[in-house]
Image (cartoon, rainbow, N blue to C red; front, side, top):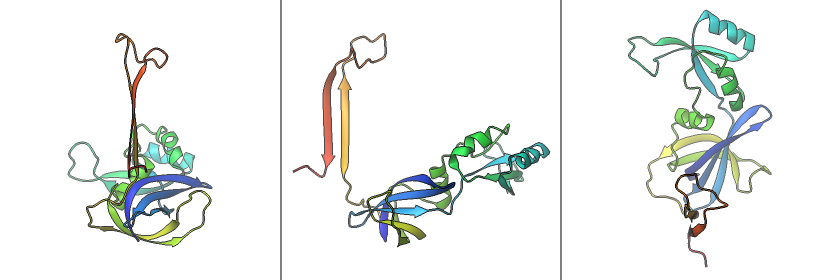
Length: 193
């Protein structure tokens, strides 16, 4: 199916994250794809202290050699890749260590980076239909995803709202009880008939 990627988020199915890719087809139909084969991870330096902490935490980890993101190195550094089940547990586990790398990258962005996905880009996605009560549009489990070279956008429905207020006292923050609304504008596409 040829689709344009609009947004990505995730939900937990039990204790496993499932990513949702919201897309529009080339005919303008909304579809959603599920992907459950990606887990959150980050890196810490390999030291005896970090290995001891990891054993205490009982989390999954593996050894990797990587160049650090800051500074010049001739050789990659020994790092530990910590893989977790729940993206929400990353900050709690990260805070156990003095220094971490890639721990502040949000789960959905880590997925997009690792998979080479870009917002508003086109992809050919193969998937099998799945029934869900969570989303009211056709939904599929992803089997494969490949980029497509295409520049035009699918037909999007757009709604923009803007509220302008008149600040009556510039010595303080805006206050909804004291500063009047002077204009509310609305723009949408396609035109309402």
